[in-house]
Image 1 (cartoon, rainbow, N blue to C red):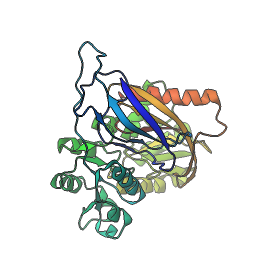
Image 2 (image 1 turned 135 degrees about the horizontal axis):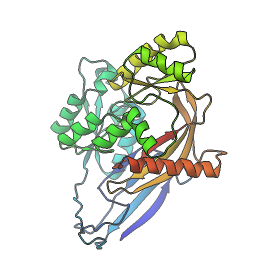
Image 3 (image 1 turned 90 degrees about the horizontal axis):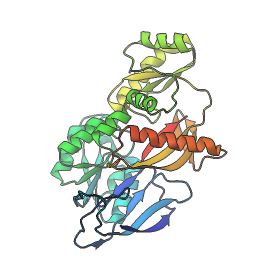
Image 4 (image 1 turned 60 degrees about the horizontal axis):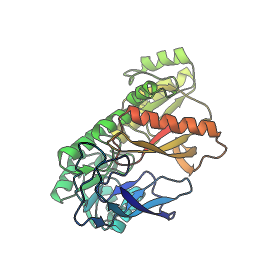
Length: 358
């Protein structure tokens, strides 16, 4: 059985952040061998939960051995003592703050241009990466990041958002280096980070999607053919990243070539891959996101929705939870679709996942 004392920390609204001090399965039935000592303190922070509960902090987790299966499983106990954040700015600072409260040592990385940035000052240790590279490229330089982690005995790496957070090769590199990636497994990152494959999984799960290409396009001609079939407006989207980068709306034929080139360049600069796919653009949609949490045993729950419709250049400015004036039946449909999609992907999330519906 699992005993939990829950407190409300509404002050620390950490979006999309989960820091796990020790790996504890809190979903589903599992026989867990007792640790020594049997009682220990930990905090598990669930970020991005803005449904009135604020930030959940789970204190004093008591693990008592209880057989739930005929063949019990043993969960390896590997405490995280040092965390690197492969990012910069406010997201890195948020993770550092959470780690400090957990008693976990923190490591920052920074580019030559970010020498004076605050995130470098907030960490216990800080190391230069991507020497001689432009600032964005430096934070995409996987070999340097892994090298710093191994040389300084980093236990786990948190990717933050953007940059390498949706790169399966980064998650794989962490795994191969013996450093924990605080996030989904490489395979799940690959499936859901590839927007084209994610669309295919959504269709398999019975989740409605807007018309779009079945694979990344390789030429302007493919975009022209799509526009002829579905009409304007259409939108170019980065196939291997998000956050509004690599997105361009096209409203007429004359704009196609210029926006194709711009979207490709933006995606390449931001994610290291310029691949694009095309969708029919929906005018004035509501951008609703559902937060989901799953474990490697196939258990998935949703943590309700938030409205992210207020945006600038396709990037969220304000998030409101719960979404106002959302029909209860539509809310149920959105959340159930999100859980079904996660299950379709055989989710093995180590941090909350977000599924966006527009």
